[in-house]
Structure formats: C-alpha cells, structure tokens
Image (cartoon, rainbow, N blue to C red; front, top):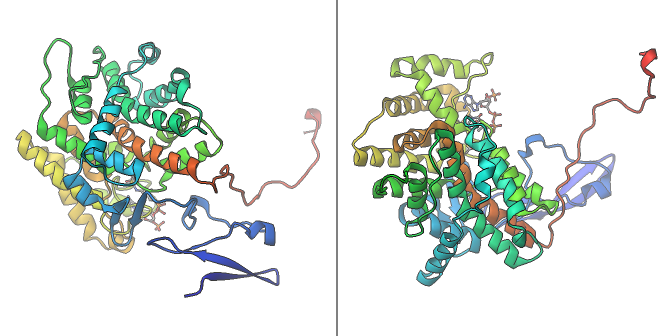
Length: 427
Ligand code: ACO
C-alpha cells in the first residue's frame, strides 16, 4: 500500500505522507499543504478531517464498534463501573484493586462544592434550564479553585480533572434541587459515585434515603455509556477551547454549552418529547412520513449519527437496561412500546435503510431516565455529568501532546473584496 498521497494543483505535484493508526482509516498528513501550495482544504463539519492524534477511544461506525482504550463498550457496560471506566479513560489501563480504591477515595473526597457556590445558584431564575445553570456554575469553578489552574503543571491538571469528575454530580443535583425549590443535599461519601448522586437528587433532609441498587446500577451503566465518544462536537469544543491555554473549568463549561444542542446531547430530551408527542403506536406512520418529507424540518430524534452507519452499540445496551429497570421497579411506560415499534418500523423503511439511520444512544436513554424519576430537562445535564471524564481525559491528552498547537481553522472567503467606506449621508 502506498504510504504517500499525490496531489496535483496549479500544474505542480506534491507528495503527502499517509499515516496509519493502530486501527481505522489512514490519514493524509496535510500539515505542510498551505505552506507548499498556498491552498487550504475545505471540510465544513469536519466530515473528512482528523483533528488530532488520540489513544483514548476508537469507533468503527460501519461495524457499530466502540472501544475505550481497546475495551468494547458492551463489556465495560456489563462488567465495569463508572469509577473504573473513568480510571481507564484517564490513565489508559484498567486499575488493580488498590488503584481503584485510591482513585474512588480521591474522587469521593472532592464531591463537596465551595460553600459560596450555593449563593451563585440563587442568582438563577427557578425555571432556569439545568444546562444553563451547569454552564454558569462549571465556568465559575475557575473562580473558586485557582490552585489547580496552572495547565503546565501535571499535578494541577490531575487535581482539576478529579475535581471536575467529583463535583459534577453535586452541581447537577443542586441544579435540580434549585428548580424544584427543595434544599440542597450535601454529598454522603459513604455512598458510591452514582448512589450519592441519586441521594443528592431525590433525597430530602427530612427523610432517610435508601439507594435502590437496581436503579444505582442502571444509572452507573448509563454513565459508562456516555463517558467518552472520540472527537464529537463537545469534545472537539473542549479541545479547541483548551488549545488556547484556557483553564480546564472554562474548557469544560464550553463543552457543556456545545453538548446542550438538540443535534448532540440535547437529543435525549428531544427524543422523549417526540415519543410523548407520538403518544400511541397508530400515530407512528404519520411521524415517519414527516421525517422523510424534505419540506418538513421534523427528524426522528435519537435516530442517525455522524459516525455510526450501523446500530449504535450503546443503544443496544440502553434498550436492555430499560427492560431490566422496568422489571425491577415493576413499572411500564407506554412510550417504551412506542419507541420499540417506531424503531422496528423505521428500520424496515427504505428511507432509513438507504441513509443508514439507526437508533443512537439517545433513543432509549430518555425512557429509562424518566422511569427513574428525572424530568426531561435533566437528561442532558446527566449526559454532561458522565461525559466530563471523557472531556478531561481528552483535554489532558491534548495538553501533554508535544505537537499541540492552538486550533485555528481557515475559511473559504466569499464576502466583499476590499471597498471604500461610504459616509452615512452618501448611502
Ligand atoms: N430523521 C430523518 N432523516 C434524517 C435523520 C433523522 N433523525 N438523520 C439524518 N437524516 C437524513 C438527512 O435528512 C439527510 O438526508 P439527505 O441526504 O437526503 O439530505 C441524511 O439523513 C444525512 O443526514 P445529515 O444531517 O447530513 O447527517 P449528519 O451526519 O450531519 O447528522 C445527526 C447526524 C445530527 C445526528 C442527524 O442524524 C440528526 O439530526 N439526528 C437526530 C438528532 C439526534 O438524534 N442527535 C443525537 C446524535 S448522538 C449524540 O450526540 C449523543
């Protein structure tokens, strides 16, 4: 196989090296292209662009494969815990027993927020979206934890990463508590990461809160499924923000803002709203027709993915988890039936087959989060909580990369060429 790519432009020939990763498509190294040819590449949406080198997560979208540090997501979801997967993403290897114990203790000891941050919440309207609060409060962390913002210092980087992972459940739970007018519940470090989050969200000071182990395990698994996903929009945002040397709290706040959009993390909220709007299986064909109609902006939320052109492996685990939680809690929800039938109908429809549109992780996550008791507005906040470990792992990898530079794309300019200013009375 050739290890260089040839380019002919303006009558000249150029050779560019072709680099191979450990698995996945080769990449053409065009770093010298502009210097040599005076031309840029044009790739809006980055559909053909590898923006960095990374050893954290691998996706084969055609085969529906997702690996974290080489381990398949299905195995991690079945056998691992969110704490263990977090250690793996951050450090590259699965921990031994002592390493896992130390890591869990470290994260547990950082769960509390600076007390003054509670007053920050009170500045928000009660009906503020939790993601609006998350963007603000996480950005504000840099004003409270100056002692870990020297990004050139690996110890600072480690401490700020641990703080972010540890404090995110507290921040998300407080956003929820504020919206329902209940008192904030402090962390209880005798509980697991996920059990603690459940108690801070659903517990009240007046009563003892018992963590339901089935719900705890299901939510922990949902966190594993959302922990990282290669160079998606929010992760790329974190990397781009971090490439300027911004502190990690500011970078993660930028990632949260990007995740909020309905084409990304906001899709879980949108997917459940859609299933409720459909309401009953007999209305599914109408919505499928709408999704196929080019003149209708409606899309099947929770369907389709930029990278997966096959079943999203996270959706498979998510569907199983819905069944487990429903069985354990002895509940059912008609929207799950609507979701199952919608999936079946769409997967047999030529439009979805031809465009390779399959359910993604968000298709079933709303059903299960709703069964656990979370309001739809919290769904994306939970995604942000879980994705924080991926963001900090990718941010750390970038800062430690000697090839790292500030991210600065160029453009194809189509505006006016130079022209003279016209005074107001002459326009
Ligand atoms: N319903 C109907 N048609 C769709 C859908 C959908 N959900 N998704 C894509 N299509 C169609 C598009 O109309 C387009 O058709 P065309 O080629 O005739 O113009 C074609 O499939 C390709 O779609 P693009 O938008 O070009 O694909 P892209 O890779 O840019 O978008 C995205 C991927 C944003 C996820 C898209 O599939 C979508 O909007 N899905 C719904 C939102 C969603 O579920 N997002 C969650 C993604 S997963 C995550 O962030 C965790």
